[in-house]
Amino acid sequence: MQPHEEMMEFLKSCPVLYLATVDGYLPRVRPVGFSMWYNGHLCLALGKHKQVYKQLLDNTNLELCAANDRGEWLRVEGTVNFDNSREAREAAFKVMPQLADMYNEETGLKLGIVYLDRLSAKLFSMSGTVKEILRY
Image (tube, rainbow, N blue to C red):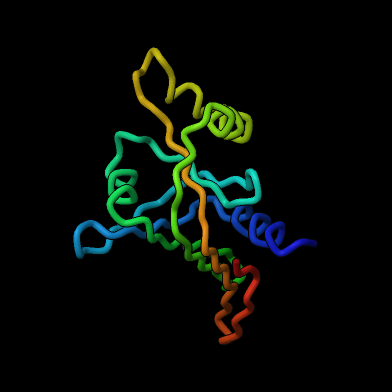
């Protein structure tokens, strides 16, 4: 199994990911339910109208955390880039078709795809072990 596959398998096993950003100098954390591996990067889909998207425009550093029921959690750090291509949105709609019901011409809401560079993914356990899964 490739390192990115191990990371994505863990993320998909967790129903909720927690995304941390910075708002000015204050931390902000919120749940997100979407991630995909696309064009060699971990990608998230975010509404362009949401504060999280605006915060990432101002400060491209983010951290994700996801935990499973076995006492393990994955911490992913990275720098965000924005992919406004139609192909990236269509890939997200394939992964999670209900996004197309929310983000379309009728609703007027626009979906933004962000991908991570300078990615670090580490798996932690309650026993204190830390495993670096991915770093690039």
